Image 1 (cartoon, rainbow, N blue to C red):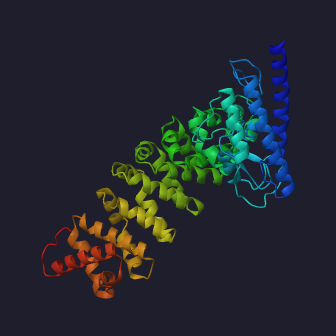
Image 2 (image 1 turned 180 degrees about the vertical axis):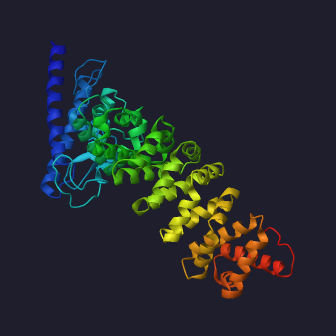
Length: 461
């Protein structure tokens, strides 16, 4: 009879405790400003502590607030964050009075200024530790021998990524192209808007890059003619490539570089530009430069530079990154880089950017020969002669220096430079007011000219 009474008491106490916990959370864990709300809350806390102590007496060895099964303890929903669906580790109160796990609500507030539950626009973004709820959770865990995580160091992968796998499934499965397009549009939006989606897309979803690009690997005419689908997928890939830890995985995924190369040549202007932007992003990693350089990508990027317009900046910058690895310079020159750049500079298009790229490859003998054959030194001297940005002048004089330094017919080239100096004082002016690098190259050229004028063979600098 005594055991029966004890069991009945425990059930009653558990019900009362659940009711009190619900009431406490409805007050925001102490976030209300009015004294009346705070007083009610303190009374509820005292009552909860009384019930917990009483339960320790009547049921010291069994679970509280849940079934007595020792295999599993169900965490009360009041102790779970509505964002993470997990027991709260660092409960905090936001302006709406609701309580959330700190790490999750912090991530939410990076993108929203509303309460996730009420959709209320928050008057401020201050997070207040919910000490009372934290204490209740702590006591509940002790009573149930439930191992509560000690901190929120575990990286949040669930927030904003719950629907990503289903979107990938719709994109990669042989469904209708219309549905693939709709799913790709949503994925493009999420990877642009949410940092967490970009950060955890690759690591949390193995094979996600391959699945994303599945439609582009098909031989379907319907997909080939769907420019919107292509644009969504390439733009999503670009969004993902922004994250440093994704760059290597993306570049090393089979078919990524070939597909980007293909997209440089066809599709909407946005598709082509974002393909170049993706390659620029990926080429920030040294190992990726070799992967990209061993493809047909350089030729396609150079083709974009030749087209000009909105394509030049991303394409030229990507080629610059790729050619920072010396073995790729020969490939770039072989792919027709020099005449394309020379032509664009003569047109006055993106002169500073293209001069920087040309200065990088001007250490290559074939590049120098092609510039000499094009008579490009005259264009460089014209740039040096006119007031322009210091960076453009610096790169122009570097190219002139390399063209002379690597030219077998150095005496003929130096005669041209000597005439330039005698008529305009170009190199003397540059030696006085150029950048440090420009001054060094201009002074070296002036020394060559002095030796040449005295009949001495100029020495390589």
